[in-house]
Amino acid sequence: MSSPEPIKFTDGAAYERFMAPWSRSAGTLFLDWLAPRPGLAWADVGAGNGAFTELLVAKSAPSSVCAIDPSDAQIATARQKFAAKPVELSIGDAMALPYDRDRFDVAVMALALFFVPDARKGASEMVRVTKPGGMVASYTWDIVRGGTPTQPLWEELDALGIPAARPPSADISRFEALKALWAEIGLSNIETRELVVERTFADFDDYWLSMVVSSPSGVMGKLSEAQGAELKRRLQARLPASASGAITVHASATAIKGRKAA
Ligand SMILES: C[S@@+](CC[C@H](N)C(=O)[O-])C[C@H]1O[C@@H](n2cnc3c(N)ncnc32)[C@H](O)[C@@H]1O
Image (cartoon, rainbow, N blue to C red):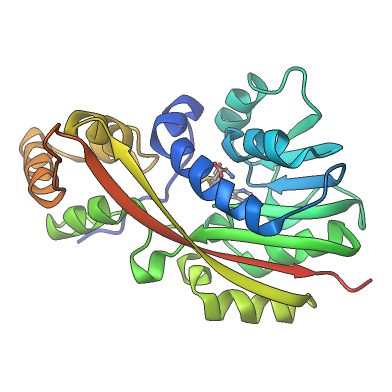
């Protein structure tokens, strides 16, 4: 079995079909839990195509948001969303944020920390750019316990001998790892929360287009016609459809928040 190529986010429109609805439902629970007051300055790190950023603007009434992601394609899609909103978009890496220290009231990573090759460095950068007394928070799919919405696809690809690419820092999705990291980088008042969500696809074709064809792992390019047909057969057998043909997939995420010393 050869190792899979890393996941690359090269298509912001495909991300909209694949992950944005998940990002909005889990992001809603995350923001409700953070319960920030309005008028704060936010850093949204690993902002992708702006799906979570848009939610943050709508729900949390920030005074400003600096949203950053290394993918040109994701940021290009995000630019179409924020023409008249208080969002500054940049291309850059969580491990070297181009912001001054103590600049933001809140720094967040939504579904991004597990994609950062050095998760500790990424989290430390969030602490550096957050004001004393400010909040640093993150949520990721609970990959280790099978909570990612891509779990059915990953398992069926593995079973076919076509290993699915996983995020490079998947282990940081564990509550124990998150709590240890938040304490190690000097945060206090640490709290964690499980976020449980589901998404209903109109039918199997909707699921296939959204979660397989649009996947940033580029799975379709790795399958022969026969393998594609077999993957479809396996997923169809595994994902029960309602009487109307709808398919509901469940997922869970691990969230953490903490405060920088005042
Ligand atoms: C699953 S998406 C999450 C996007 C968005 N926050 C959301 O909730 O929809 C993960 C994002 O992490 C970004 N990413 C990957 N490596 C990164 C890094 N080193 N620093 C910051 N972001 C990174 C990817 O480009 C991708 O857009």
